[in-house]
Length: 579
Image 1: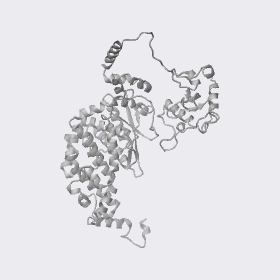
Image 2: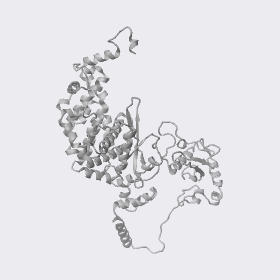
Image 3: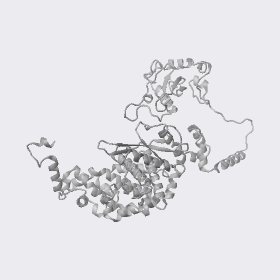
């Protein structure tokens, strides 16, 4: 398939009046591969060859694993032309002696029978372009004058009455219908619509409208009303044989993944599974979600945690779905706290999309999942806190964001923080084996090393504290159904500008650099943790508890094991046999 295109320069540019004629040849598997673009005019440019070939990175096939380079299947024809327009006219200073020559030649270039600028023909030509203005180097847009057809002046009160009645009739339509009508308009038309009245301006700039327009498959450009949108998941085994999970959160439709076989995101990040999103009740496709869980379970045995599934369970979907969502939410926040990814609005909206699915599961399968029972067991039975019964504390914390039975951070913080600190003793002693000596007396070193070795887990706790306080506790008077409805009205996003609030909260967490600041943030900076000595004493007590529950071993036992592993218990003169 071949298209022709016309590129014009901005009237304020030195290239004003130039008319570039392009030919775009699309391969059969577009947009998997880029189209080829050829410039038919002559243009002095360092990246335009004599045959009209344009050397531009975005048009090159991506061969490496490096992101943000080369062609992306998300590019539309419009994005290609906009990039070319900026790219081809950026050398004003370098080509200053050739610009007027290129402008004049472009006006004489002919592609008969359609394109002949000297005779007033430009092809392709947008219907709103003024050809004479283009040839004179002026704005291509036709100016539209609105005036009276007769000499009479209309009465003001009649005009006001007509406007008021028309607006009232139109505004009587449901908001959802108005948004649907506005969705057919272009960006330029919407800017015009904003000027009609305050109501239209508010609706065009509303969260509901802007979010709905962004819910488009990056590959097929189908909207969430035309296809079920989801995200790609990349699940793979690392060198140690353990599964890793990642997602770029690019919106991709069911058809693009299953029919067209798309397996790379906007910036060429790989994915091999697809997960539908819960945008609203009409869009949520539980059957697709079930299929995705079944596919992951089949292709990646052992990835999903099946230990929570009761015996003789007839439907294991809710347990496995809850596990996958928990992993996704945890992975996203861990990567942000480690600095591997940015706390972008896109990432935080993705987190909220996963939270919406969890709300659905809690509503639909609450009794079977036993969420309330699990939370109460963790808070009231020491055995339920142990790794054997709760291997991942993140799972418990993510259950708490469902707000079961009025759970608040203040009601769970002592149990949670104590168990986290007990578990962190292992990593502290792994970083510095001297920390296994609980009689060291060096408070400053213990507090410093403890923070350095466990700051990621501490930041995870702070994030959950923030989410509980700013979202769950603020909506404690709402049922899960009402919170779900709030998500649905905003197309899977929280109300207001909560993502921006969440983003600021994460930036604040990332600035925390001391253990004392961590305890203060989570509300544990009470009388028994208000000094370095008291914090160090608390850490020692948790380290002692870690030995009691079997997470770590006493210092003497650790030293003995290190001697054995290093070969010191054998022949000191022939250590080569231990290599």
